[in-house]
Length: 313
Length: 313
Image 1: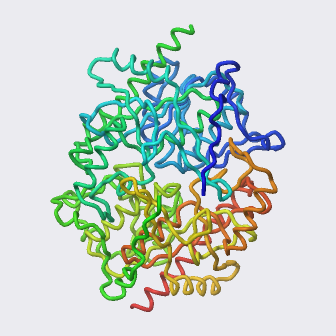
Image 2: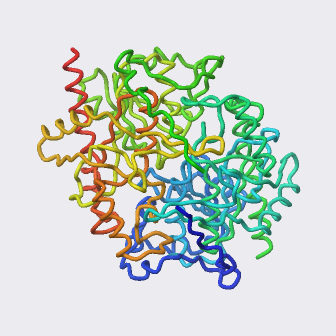
Image 3: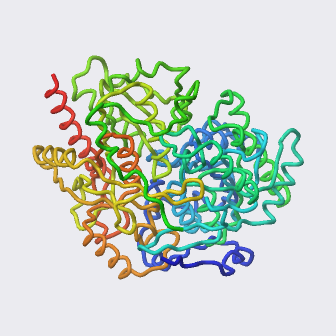
């Protein structure tokens, strides 16, 4: 079936004019109530503008513990009043996602893989829309496998590509394949790269990020329960990826980029690499070092957010 | 690109002869250590045969809280010695998945969507292999949207199908599309259906289960942040699904079925429906009733496990 190319127009420039978050669904206007089921929030049960209207930055990442730690970290970095340990999980009524607010920053977990983050993104975009948020920047801070990089390197995504190294996200809607562009905001990526350079001992590069739907076979790992290819097959695939500009591999960036683009949200992806996939598949780095690596995207984003808030104050 | 059809041979009958769990990866034999990263377990750091060698049933589901509740429930049902509240999360060192053991039953959460459950399945199958488990039955107990069924109906999956109603799972491996069969164990499904009939007030049907990679557009919902189709388009798709034998829609069954089949594991999928998608998209059922619905697959599985253990004692 020939894929249908959607949303390659200039929707993504809308935010420059209005600053509002665009839902692209005419049906929403006719709904009396909107239940954001996986957040355990709703338009009738919660005052979303009062709860979220001041949000300017949304940071998302796979692990609930990590996103809680980030919320506490940015709370301290922004010198907000109160005790950072008092930040409650706004989605406490469900265990699908966790959500924490620290001043103008929202920190949300999204689980692993495209379907998991896509459910979160649908409900987050509706939340920002219902809350009438303006000029919001979304940043995914995650972990990844590196392709020819020292472990611990922070990769700011230039373009999110699929397993065929294409800058697109394919999805099935009512039995038809549709394709969306995964273009991210170039200026934002450059600005984040500059932030990385300003922080000592934070190796930061700009590169393409490959998003796969499987961690083992789908990323050419030799250590899954199933594997039908050789070490040489694996290395050849990684070499091709590297030639296509891929510097890291994760599992969420394409749908994140595609949905942000359609809805006029400025977005970036910043992932630290936990290993160099040319050298291995297993993550055997000591726990303490892994924790340190995972903080690097947080330091970078904190630096970026502080710069922006100072500019506006 | 023409897809490559893999693993449609008679691998799935192997378990009848040996009862062992088959990993299908020749590389594993040459690994000194196997770190099951997302479980925070490993062959050098944990005595997996001692910890898991007696496992006969593995039940998996999306939500960590629900799988903890199931472990406590089955602990009581099996009249195991001790306090069910003392069951600890075996994966406590990570928040990617939760895992609880109650006698011969392992209960694990897998998050939402195919990529998330596939990571768990790779590591689970390796765990069962390393632990030398025999005659293991895997059952996914989940929630779903119903297609023409009363909410609260329990659907035992006949065949897991994709968004095109095909009994197959497509995956990209090293840039090539491969296709695996999603055939489940027919006898097991019939046995579970019989169990459902033996429990009062537990409406149970056998039907096909459609597995999608998106909860909103991918399932024809009109209430996501994005929607480019009409109510009539949605209903037509659901009617076609119903004609193809689909009785419920969820987001994990195809890869679960495909991986179990390849590795010679008897497997079944049992999901309760939370709403009838012909009548709506939002899950607005009261919280208490949702909780009651979600216990139904647990009652059914408990009945099945008790019957089997009595037979063998």
